[in-house]
Amino acid sequence: FLGSHLLLELLKSDSHCIIHCLVRPRAAVDASTPEARLMTHVHAALCASGYTNHEAHTKLGSLRERIRVVVGGLPDPKLGQTLVPLRFDEVWHVAGSMHFAERHRAAVHEANVEGTRSLLAILGDCGVTRFNYVSTAYVAGPSSGPIAEAAVPVGMPANNSYEESKQLAEQTV
Image (cartoon, rainbow, N blue to C red; front, side, top):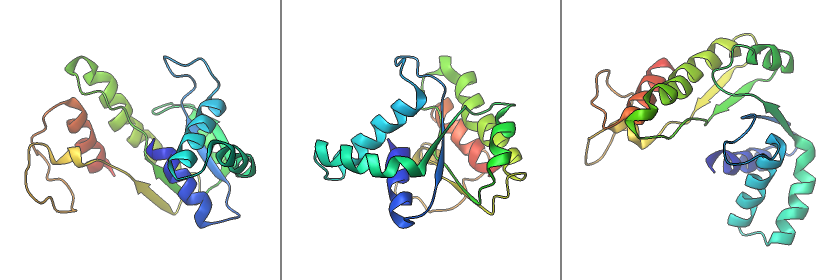
């Protein structure tokens, strides 16, 4: 959801940019191709932005040539072989696993913490000069009241493994 809306904003902000989107190879509940899944999400974002279904379909057709799908996931040790030759200057990292149940702890940590670490390690070889990391308010854990826009203190209590993983990922960045 967030990624498709961000993609539209980035495409709108620079009418000549080409955007490479890292898309997981396959969703557990969806056998469609990564490109088809991404385009479905972008179409939905266009409709949520006020386009009619027909207008969204037409607009997506004109944007499609500026969107490149890179199939992969985080962390993936082979991802560097795909990304390094692309040579891009800016990255927006909005991916993550949002499972809150304790039984998903290892997978959430792998995706959110190790995925962020592996991406940062790869990007140095890609010519990236700007890294934008989108986190979550969940990093504030059990805090209440106004939450300052600042780094989360190391050791901040977390309510679940998702919150903990996002705190650790933020500390990595």
